[in-house]
Amino acid sequence: AYDFGTGLTAAFGAQTTEAAVFTDESLDAYALNTAYTADNYGVSVTYGIVETSTTEEDTYTAFNAYYTPEGALPSLSVGYEIGDIGGAAATVDEKTSFMVGLSWDEVGPGSAGVAVGHSNTIEGTDEAYQYEAYYSYDINDGMTITPLIFTKDNVTSGLDDTTGVMVKTSFSF
Image (cartoon, rainbow, N blue to C red; front, top):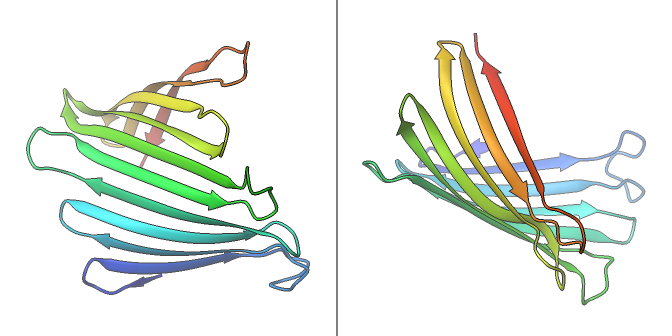
């Protein structure tokens, strides 16, 4: 990673297998990210390649941004990813994901947020939307509790949607 010192950063990552490090026989993955962060907003673009066989690869491009207005308005986060599945037929070789979230920093003694999106939707299929809401608050100086509720649409006929409740506890020392 490199920080240009003006809010602009760039990073590169790579993954390989232990048996055949960055060779034609290994299935490697590479990603490049560029981001700009200002006082109350940020944007980023990420491009990634995942080798799925010795002759095929999937490519992904992601766009993400956030904006935090001053005052009581919520922060806004958005993301969109599009992928090209290298070995798939032309009618099902596109994969998309998106997310939109709102968060409020001061709601009572904690913070709250909501989000909606769908993940890894193959072209020509129905989107399985996901929704969540959370509230996060400090128990003491070193512990934060975040209960959340979520639901995920099930696009398979005859199956119910998935709904759940989780509680995340974070410790810091």
